[in-house]
Image 1 (tube, rainbow, N blue to C red):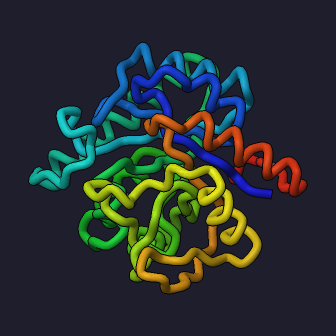
Image 2: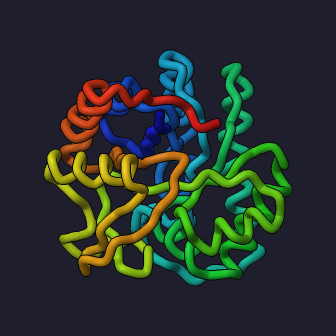
Length: 245
């Protein structure tokens, strides 16, 4: 049994197709992408297919799709992230839905995985908004450690379609090797993760990784093809897809 999540509401055309193959969705809430209309539409799709809803805030940088580490005052970043998450929470409430967790996006996600100050800021944001909301982030990261110290429920995440460095961080998407495009390679990495709790880094080093949820990116050209193939493989191997929270 495993939770499969995807980043949705980012302006791509196949959200509904992906929504039928996953158990949790991370909805863009205005930082890198997303409008009130797209948030509302994605929430309605999540309700239709029984998918758990998460907020997907980022640096306020739509120009770079939230994938660039930007200089921003901590208090300004904190208030902006709170605004993004609360916007989604309020729209969800209007639609009769609940936001269960927060997963940072892009450069913010990667920085929070290794930087104590950024991790503390994110944990503070989540605690101040709603103590019962969980935080999703990279398994084995600084963010996981700080969330647990602050009694914030943490969902350990790994990626089926991303390559890893030997230190457990994700290979930067500025490089062509960051995203796995081959469906058999994606399934091989996911299957090894589920059966052996390991991933092989780009340098060839085996990494021990424990997960609650596995992410597929909804913004890649082969997103539907990859997740459909993996969905079928999971069914064939009698591995159920189920919400982690």
